[in-house]
View 1 (cartoon, rainbow over the protein chains, first blue to last red):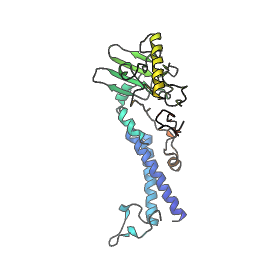
View 2 (cartoon, rainbow over the protein chains, first blue to last red; view 1 turned 60 degrees about the vertical axis):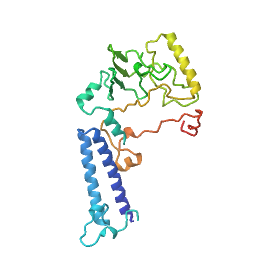
View 3 (cartoon, rainbow over the protein chains, first blue to last red; view 1 turned 180 degrees about the vertical axis):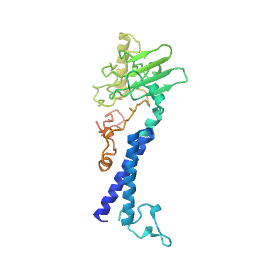
View 4 (cartoon, rainbow over the protein chains, first blue to last red; view 1 turned 120 degrees about the horizontal axis):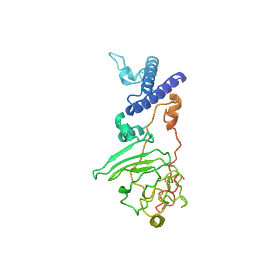
Amino acid sequence: MTKEQHQLLKHITNVSFALTEAVLFLDTHPCDQEALEYYHMMKEQRREAVEKYSEKYGPLLNDQVQCDKYWTWVETPWPWE
Amino acid sequence: MHIYVLVRKIIPQNKKERNLSMNAMNTRSGYNRSDGDGADYRNNMNDRGSMGNCSEDNDRSNTGCCCNMNNGNAMNRRGGMNYRGNMNNRGSRSCGCNMNNRGCNTNNCGGNCFRGNCGMSQEEMERKMQQCESDSAQRGCDAMYGMHLAMGYVPWQEWGKTYEPAEGIGCGTIFPELNLPFLGCVPRDCGCGAGRGGRA
């Protein structure tokens, strides 16, 4: 795994955590506008990061596999490899 | 972060309901309970140091030492079986059951239990306290002796500053106000040996 890939994966982990935190907060504060803004911001950051990762290093999640005749999920290294 | 689940359970979500649970002391934490016995408790504990709350009617299982009340004007009695209590008084008197000097660390787990005289005379209260301490000595150092089980409070959290995600994941929370040191304690030498090696 290259350093860049590792950093991108780390970034995805970080924003995913922040997103989960926002979700938990919103569970009890559903009307909080600042929390909602934060949630959308983190969600977008996560989406962009996952998309970037998938394009460069293969699918990160199993619903991101794009193939017709071959299960390309197994082609690329696992994230921990 | 799982604490939010607890918040949801014990704090009314509806703003109107929440306001009902708040009182003139402008506390943000409310715990409402309405028992089948007709008693209505609305106790707010707005003191970071307070560790518990016990009402005189709840005091069933101990020697009488765990009774709050007598926090000056902190608890208002409204007659009948309807009490609305505030635990807002940092300087309120403890009846001595928290055993600060018994060799077990109670600095953060029992030293601020609010207790009072339950309407007893001074002499009677002193006698109860002595009995309580005597019992405690036999039981070992239970820092929360006499406090009611399963009573707790969670102040209402408000959105504020957040850590950057990379810092937040290292702290286990994105909320600086939740990034707190662990201050719990395990009593030492309580007879069973379970607390040995625990954090003082």
